[in-house]
Image 1 (cartoon, rainbow, N blue to C red):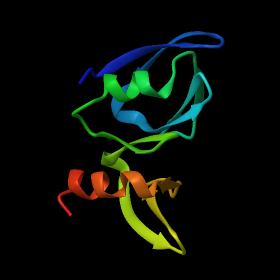
Image 2: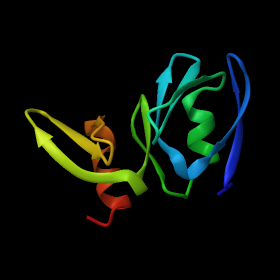
Image 3: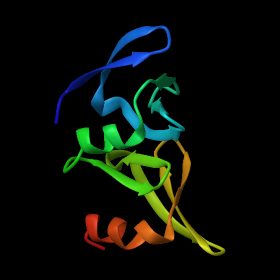
Image 4: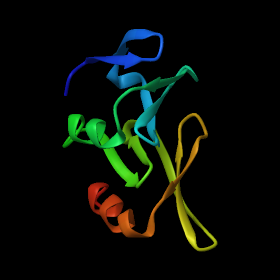
Amino acid sequence: MPKYIAVNAYNGIKVLEVSKILYLKSSGRYTSIYLNDKTKILVCKNLGYYEKLFENNYFLRIHNSFVVNVSYLKNIIREGDGQYCILSENNIIPISNRRFSHVKEFLYY
């Protein structure tokens, strides 16, 4: 996995330290990248691009709209009909029913 990535944001190219990425969220054809310092960066690539870039590393697609850095994963909870992961910054991210078994498999649950 690369230590840094360059992303094409709306206001220019930014270099990000991969280990500081909490999660990525799909925003149509764009992706919002959320960092551990609470920064949000909108980039000009779709979520599938980043899913492939970080494949087989500490990033996991848990929902059609979310890829999370499992290094920041604190907890997985079930509430009502859904499952959610809680990240270290207390971000609550939904886990789709379709991907829940893959999440458990990835975490050796």
